[in-house]
Amino acid sequence: MKPGSNYLRTDLIGALVGSLPEPTIVECNTAYGGSRSETAMHYQVAKDHGFTDIADVVILDENGSMTLPVNGGTVLTENYVGEHFADYDSYLVLSHFKGHAMAGFGGAIKNISIGIASAQGKSHIHSGGTGGSMWSGDQTAFLESMAEVGKSVVDALDGKIVYINVMNRLSVDCDCDGNPAEPDMHDIGILASTDPVALDQACIDLIYAQKDGDGVSLVNRIESRNGLHTLEHAEAIGLGSRSYTLVDLTA
Image 1 (cartoon, rainbow, N blue to C red):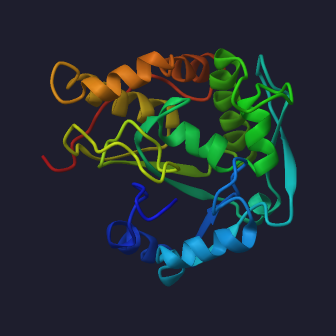
Image 2 (cartoon, rainbow, N blue to C red):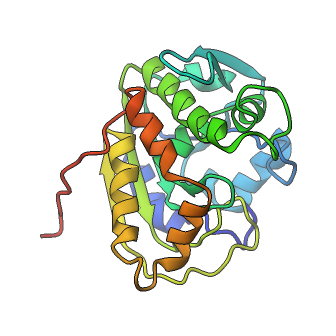
């Protein structure tokens, strides 16, 4: 997350984080180089971005990986998450919803899959479990792998996990991009759920409602990567439901 990226700023999330009992912000190292690929640099990035001012920060895979079983998957049988994943019995998954160059979009499911995966696990997911290149793996296997490892995380936590998606600065590019495209659609709001599939689907539907206006670029990004297949597979394996009831708390 470089300064030019669209990561969630502390002035937006600080009050929420501060309201939690003994909050800890967790991340895992990246598998593609950059300032978050090594633990020491990653901690420095967290400090530079102000995250250490609002909570303790732990890089989950600073001591390597642990393995979670993938139950009911068709692509993967195991998931590699940061070793410190087991130090916490519940998670609040705070995601910036946006586009993504490979997945089409990133939200709750991507955060509990790629986000919680160790650097080793990220390569495992991207390659669809083949151990091959992260960048030239089968696209369908990659999308389905994200859903399957996400389910392994939820299963391990026995449902003690809640999701919040922040729909602001809706660029077609991920926060991992240091120079993302400027958003060409307006901010939408903040959504929350205990079902990551329903939550991501609701965000997608809100974007599609703008597809004839300022949401066209993001819709094109999602469809060009077949991003909706992640939701299809997630529902098929029992991670959650694409059906939902949207409750407006501002009404």
